[in-house]
Image 1 (cartoon, rainbow, N blue to C red):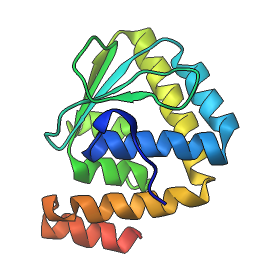
Image 2 (cartoon, one colour; image 1 turned 90 degrees about the vertical axis):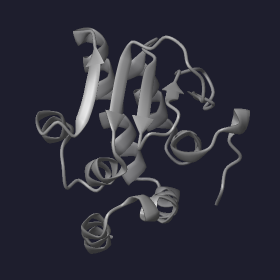
Image 3 (cartoon, helix red, strand yellow; image 1 turned 30 degrees about the vertical axis):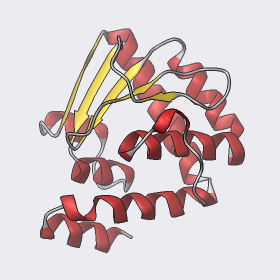
Image 4 (cartoon, rainbow, N blue to C red; image 1 turned 180 degrees about the horizontal axis):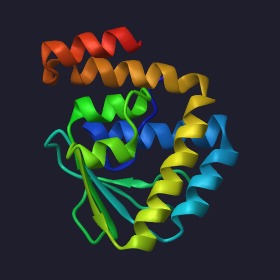
Length: 157
C-alpha cells in the first residue's frame, strides 16, 4: 500500500513519512511512544546523498519535511548501513563505532533520538504493512548498492 506523502516528499523522506503513517494506523501506541521519546527534538537524516529529511514530531503523523532548517540531531549514513540497521545485522552503536553512521547533537537530544528510534523499530516490527514498505525500499535503492551489499540484503530477506 502506498501512502500519499505530503509536501512532495521523495526518496528516503517519503519512505520515512510512510513508516510514520503505518505506525499511526497499525500501532498507534508505538507512534505515541516515539513522539513522547522525541519531545520537541528535531532530527535531520541524510541517506545516500539525498536531500535531508527533517523529522519534526507533531500531533498527527505528518512529521517529515524535505527542507533545510534547524535540527538538534544530525545523522548521515549510506543505504547499505540503513538496511543493516533495519535488518538487525548492525546495531546503531556498531554503525557509529565503525564510522558508518555519523551522528551529532547534544547528549540529551541524542538520547531522545535513540529512545525514539527504539520505539519506532519496536512498532515497525509489529506492523504488517512495514514488510511491504521495507521491500519497496530495497527495490528503490537496489541500484545504489554494490553487488556484495545486494547479496547480503537478499540473504536477510
